[in-house]
Amino acid sequence: MRRLVALFVVALLGATLYGISGSSSGVSADHGAVSNYTLSAELSAIAHNPDLECYINALDPTSYTLGAGGDSVNASAAAVWANLRVEGLAINEYVTTILKYHPDAAQLAAAKTSLESEMTEEAANSSPKCTGTVAEAVAEMPAEMRSSEIQSQATSLYLVKKLNETIPLTVTSMKAYYQSHTSDYDTLCVSIALVLPASVGAFDKTEAAGASVATLAKDYSQDPSATKGGAYGCFAPSNESFASVRADAASGTFDTFPTTPQYIDYNGSEYALFVAVTKRTATPYAEAAEAVLSDLQNLNAQAASKVKNSLLGAAAVHVDPSFGQWGLNTTGPEVFAPTVPAKVNVTGTKKLTSGSSTYK
Image (cartoon, rainbow, N blue to C red; front, side, top):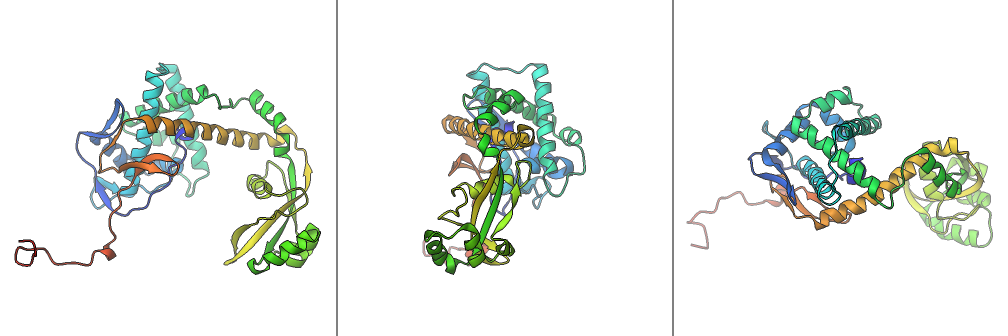
């Protein structure tokens, strides 16, 4: 659940290698802090243990490749992990000091199970697959890292439950949500038209003149489905493509291509993609349950992300420059990998000496 609060950290660019050392504060948020030594040990454990790296990478995709020395990692990985630690500190601070929540042993045990389940679920969808078990990965964490991750999971679970916008992921709540959003889970039969950009104008005029979806697809589509009037297939909520098909068709009206297409790359060329729903069929809850769960998880994640950004925006954050730079991204505050000039931009090779300097 912490990852629902933190979401996925965008992998930052940067090839500079940073050695991590020292005992002062590596990162801090208000009164919570992680020392340079601890943060260094955590990064080293991730980089040196393939099982742990695989599960951490599944949660927050980046590359924890080692640097030139044994105690260094690439700058992007250092920034990604430092960002997660700052988020955890800020959430812990708020939950423990403002909400007065201090998880007991049973709640920490439940948080550990939740964390392992989350790591397992994400790793199942990653490539390449993790070879070890999640229990082995957690065991490879340094003791302080393992304790902090479980604590952060516990406080995040508690915080999410307290959000007004959060919908409990229970069968009762899921069924209630489904009942009020039944049409969102209709099985959708769609037709498509894959149109050359140069033909979009003519396509629009023909549609405005009253041409049907089938006629437009036959006359303009470059997809093989054109011979069937663009009929592409039916997608139930249980289909892995349902979410994307639903999103693609959202801007159009029934049995009509939308006025604004999306542009995609197909076989190395750009095309305008038009998607129209030609048939809708109500889907029973049992078949839609997985899609409902996914939607509620996303809605809860969005609500949690807003709160997380509010907490981070109000927190007094410090990041040691060797781990990254604290700044504001388009999605909120986060730790950035330091930017350094590329070698191609460094043209001078001579050293400045007192004899050659203009400034004597």
